[in-house]
Image 1 (cartoon, rainbow, N blue to C red):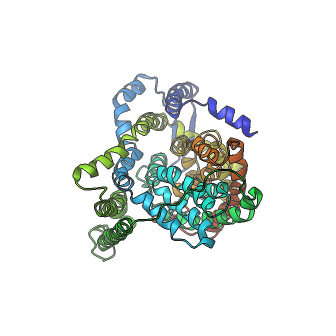
Image 2 (image 1 turned 45 degrees about the horizontal axis):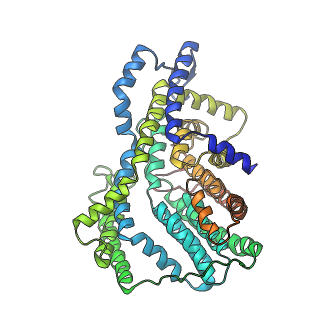
Image 3 (image 1 turned 90 degrees about the vertical axis):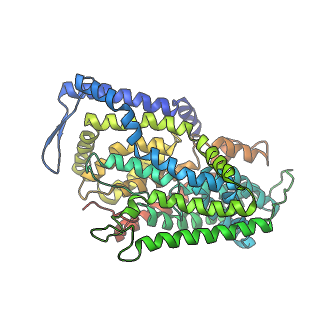
Length: 497
């Protein structure tokens, strides 16, 4: 079955081509929908909504005038480019890689597995650092300690990739997903805002699930199955942190504390600068509407302090070079966003999105599939789709315009943050076993270092127990969360209204 998954997945076009094709498909379907009188009654105000053709004179004029506007106003574009300024500084200065080494090297031997999984979760702040640095480091550490290197690789892989939906901090992926969710939700509620921290409380709780499940599976299932390592790979010494690096981390920590303190002063006092000036609210305030700038500052100033201390940032030119290098990797993403934005806004203009959402919501209610079974089913659907398509943002850009409005229209109406959280769980679970994941080939390369016979099948069979156990534990957490009615994050209720 997995061989077939790989074959089918490899036949999928590039995500850019996929979105371009989907945009053209929406144009054609909108014309057909218009000719056939496709419509639905809005459940809130009772108004009839009809499909609008993008091939009519009005539709063609709208496309011509709005293609550029669609691209510029697509929320994930600005969010990601802004936060990459801070992430680029942190990655280029060496702060991320040193943080990961400090976390792993500072842990007692009996906690080394947990430390590696935890480091993987935290490395989600900078995806490349996790895949490129931590995963081979996890194998190296286990090998150096006389344990099977594949178990260390698997533990790190679980934290990095399985922890896509879990973290203790807001990272670069959060504004991407929330921006897409917001665009989709505005089909139903035009002024709704989905902030990047909408899943934050749930992400923190999920981090502990990934940590505990990843550690337990490694030590109780994967490592015993692998047995003793009998390969011939030479044990590599793990480079200890220098005094300068330790001082740099301390200074970065102080810089972060000062940044957090200044931000706190703007919202904690009743007359705080970034509170809502009329109501005094914190959740609905300039602070959370501009949270992406807060995230940028929390990366930027610690990176600056670290880089100046260790010498990786000696002047403004070094800083700009680090940020520029990080931004240079975003070219493919910008091209992807251009076509994804057209798909999303074509879908919105044609009214197909809201019509499908209303009809889908009516179907779900007519068959009685609502509540917890519906959300669990959506987690499983997301996990299944992830087996064939690797890019999380590309998948969500396709799924959100249908499922976010659909789940906002059922009874009770689910907040976009809940739909997004369910998607993140499903996507995380099968990241570990799908060859379609963009870094999967790199993982195989790391494994081959310890045994030439290791291949895709080795990685999938090693990681499958993590997918199963983590899936059971994570879905259980979501079910308990829904039963308790706990908010998913700041301004992130389970239900609308």
